[in-house]
Image (cartoon, rainbow, N blue to C red; front, side):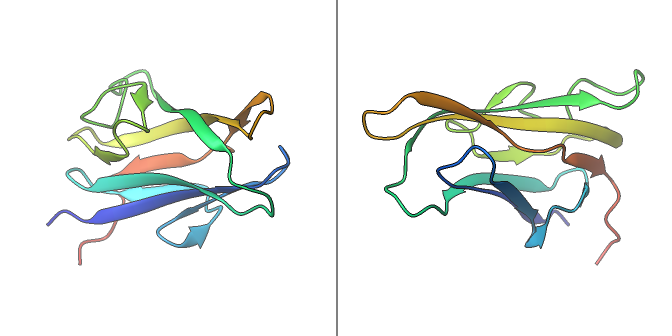
Length: 129
């Protein structure tokens, strides 16, 4: 039976603070998931000023082995997370490193790019319920 998972990115006004959680666990290096599961990605501003506009949000994945497919997601690679925030895991098994990058702009300010530190997706690693 497929499960729904959540990957949340938290950021503030500074470029220094980027935190992420997977199903509520913070900065776990490994995101365990099974084929057919879904992951909904979100970005949450936790700063003190007005939330900046997110102009672009992209996810790119890379297999950790040449024998693996290019993307663990049915939607392919790269993925525009603003247009498609919920992704479905395909049938391929293995590990993928991925990056999320997003461009933000405060009112009248410059556009800045943020990068989420190195999470890894491990397909078919969750124990059955």
